[in-house]
Length: 172
Image (cartoon, rainbow, N blue to C red; front, top):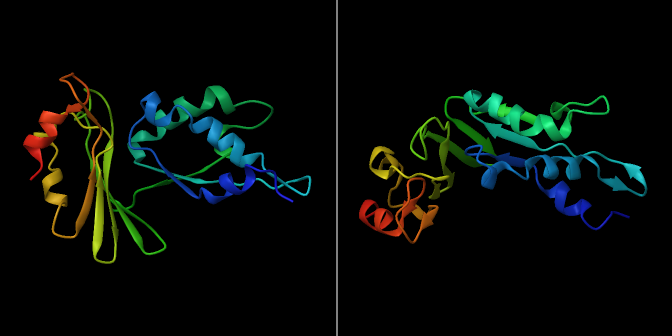
């Protein structure tokens, strides 16, 4: 039999990290450790998810994972497979993930991306955290097949996240 959480962790095959702020990537090492240390009938059956990032984010990924995972003869690379967007896209079972580079649009110096997630005749745009919407070009990825835009938003003005007023002014 499976331990109660094993099924949950085995169901996670791909992880997209838009940027490496703690509220988006802080629990990644625990997720990968719990995925790896799964058991079936008392036998260790490691599950190793794929982490999808931009090549430019590899150092951020290593910096995030190494402190908690580089021990007992293992490194963070033993717990996940890393793949990069190739030609700006990644596909999983007929769903296409298009990487939209959003460097410095959340905060200065932050390498980040948004996603357009497409399946058949519909898509969703996930912004990942953007303050500077007018510089993002996100409207170029929104069309009549867009069923949702997922935008991190605050109800007040601040220097890091778009406010509700920013979002209402930017999107049609």
